Image 1: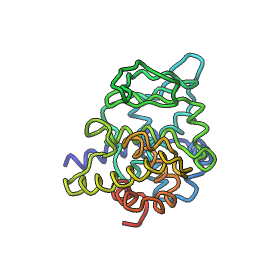
Image 2: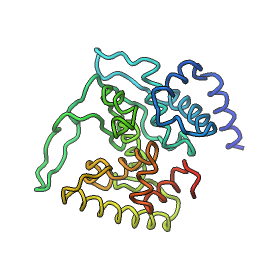
Image 3: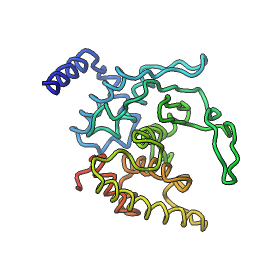
Image 4: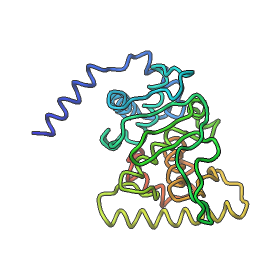
Length: 255
């Protein structure tokens, strides 16, 4: 009964808040990595993006930046690529996405290898906390819409962190339904991350962004970018971890 009511209310929300065709078409044109997505996935992406825009506040972090409908839709669409075969409920526990006109200094303290606590740090392009807003630098969002030229996708990266944090501190393991799946994911993640960090530390030039070697959580977020926008590279490099990602996100028909 409750499921039927939820579906009814969701359908009514989608009908009432339907994204204009020209706005959605422009959004897709600015995200070339979606060009090869099958129509059913794009239809679900449009629906989830609509619900995302209804539920979340995408606001400016500075008076000098006006967040346009296109900017909001671009953020929503990229965030929802990760949950296209899941539910908008995956992004629970926060309501705001703050878009800055440029890079910004982190609001979070960090601890270095010597155990010294530092406040803030160098300017960054994005930031996510477990119960706080997602912070994004608009120039970096705009540059990373074309994954092939930029080699990154900032929005996907930060929202992968949000999924990672849904079961506690970010550790590269999102919520999984069974202990067996958790253990299998952990093994695949550990093998891939250990290998990648060793390659980066040895000075190897890798096709995967070396930033992924910083921590298991960053490895997961970078791999989530690849999974969405360049799955062949991830599949060829770390097939076991790719298989775990595909089991979780269920975007590609290779289970």
